[in-house]
Image (tube, rainbow, N blue to C red; front, top):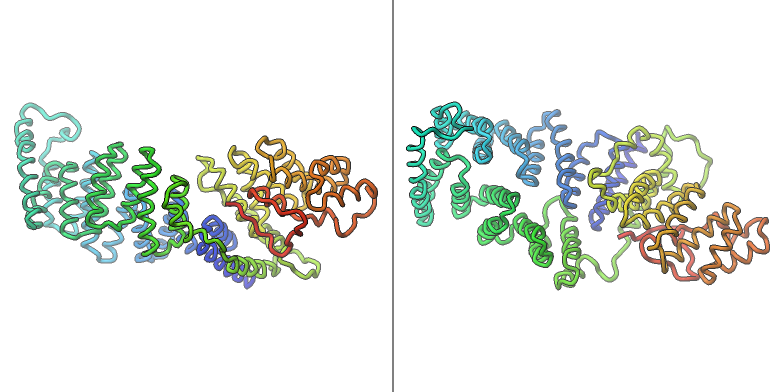
Length: 568
């Protein structure tokens, strides 16, 4: 138990360091290892949800938040559950179930005003979608809290007075007269509400708009004017939710002009609203204008750098990466590069974190088979941790699946696999990299990195197969091909296949210690390997460097203490 607690503490520290360094995938890998050690660490799901939200994986973020929210409800922690469901509603305004849960939890916390606002907004939106039964339930909930609420009263009265089939069928001739009259009166009432709003008579304008909504639930003109009223009155929290919903509905209808107009209207009052700046960026993305989208994301990033989102430290780095992807030649990239890509980044935090994880994980637990007394090293400790983790969590291995199986996000599999390898978790790394190797774009790098993991695991033949497959890829050329040939020659030599080793190494005769290896194999092919060129001590650095697009200069010795790689 003590070893598990120390392991969890080390993983938590590692995850925090990864988040601070802008490496969300590594942080996710560390948090998932915590859940494997102790599945009841539900607070980890909050971190996973935040990280997935920062990376734009909304469905994964909602799943993580829901897991934590349900746990809080089961434990009777209503206040904590309310905070989680508010987060879901803010991240995904179209999640009506989460918003309904927010209203219910507000009632339990005696937050009646907030509950009324949530129910009213749900009623309007459900009515606009012609989901009258659900709208009625929302308005009835309002009346249970505030029996005299005029909007809810008028909506319920309208439903009770309407014929049973009037909600679905066209009105009869006898009913068209009054309906037409109401329709003719609506423009006059809208104009009167707008006049009162412009004169600062907000209460009177709101009463008129509420009456109109009760007669024509979901009328977009009325909803837009009501949102504008809340904005002018200074109810920014209410107005923001309304504008996000209205702009989102316009985007779903591909009415980008209306969506931009609504967003611009709100940003005049609150120009530093990150949510709507990013929503405007999404509009430009959908229209295929990457440079305009990058400008909006740049404005959001300026705000985030001054006022970071609580609990989301890697969000600015994610937005910078998006700007760089959308408009690599934009001046914004050069402006933000010194912030996110300093010329001499420090490695101290990363090194300390890795060393702490290694030290904690190298301690044996009660269920690890006895091992010979060997002094642990920074290279061997991750392997010991991997065996312990494998023995204790074998049944949970299948649950650690990628977040987007339907989209086959091979790049995510590759990045997560490299993160696992970096932490010494070879089994998990092999699982992720094997999935990544099935893709197209990252298949070559995934095969190379997979070979490095298999070699570290001692399965040389499988590693040889991966490198042979990588070498056959037409994209494997230049420095990458040199590194792959070198590592393949080392593996052939280790397996005693000297003819093949000599043939492959002779294609790179001046690389590192290749001349010595060729000379030794030609003269002493069946003798004991000299210690200076023992192939079983060959470093995986050339392969790792090949996968990251870099190679070590000839003559450099691999650093056995710090086997770090760059994969981004």
